[in-house]
Length: 300
Image 1 (cartoon, rainbow, N blue to C red):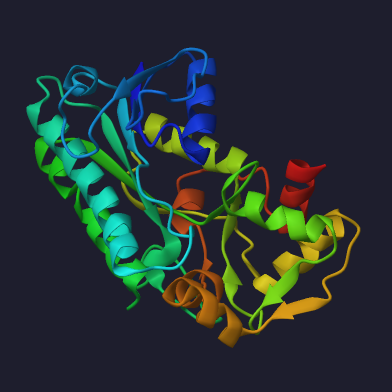
Image 2 (cartoon, rainbow, N blue to C red):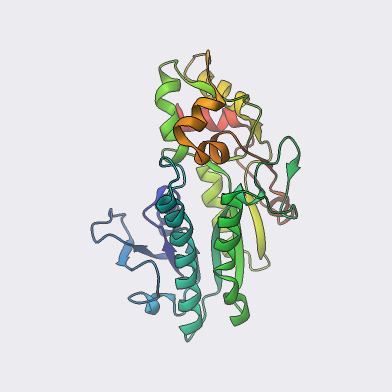
């Protein structure tokens, strides 16, 4: 009953860690910082983000390794150094997991490989599922290499589930950055506003990861997103309504591109309507299927 989490001090990792502890798991959080925040029942282990040095003993015989490590994609303009960090932080963490699995005497039962719906690129109004083709954007290429970084674990007989996560709604992540302006009535639509927003409540995100850890028949790619993705305009209206406000502003696409460059094009102005077909087929039930209900639960 041991789970090793890379990126365990991040937004998703912290909530997942608490839930695993509550269910009786021993949780090992791999962190780059010796000053990682303490979560009751979680053991922090410092690692270099690139190898199995210092944590191989915990991978040996583990129930699961959950690989969530990666540099924040939405923290400013993408210059060459930032793009390199976005890619290498993910690929190096995956290669470290692969190395740990290869060296483990008793192989972990499953590797949960972090990923993102950005794999599909900017898809327009057509919905996508796990069988849809890869997009042609920078993030699409990053996700492809991120997923491939742990391909080798399957050759060692280890089950692998790839979680293509959408925007996670909770007390952190993208929503935390958006709430301030909307709370005070100065939130805005972005560009034309028709871009797809695939989203998932943090509680369903964590429940889905646990579901994939514990269900031994689940392998391959899974979209972790609500069954009802929305346009950004609708999402913005729902967020404003929770604060009893209305959206009266619109940030023009050309301004966002001027300020944030490629990041704006791919993250803010692009999107997809990703459907969790394989997760539903496996028997998972979402607690939150409507964006407004999820936002009300988190904010109120």
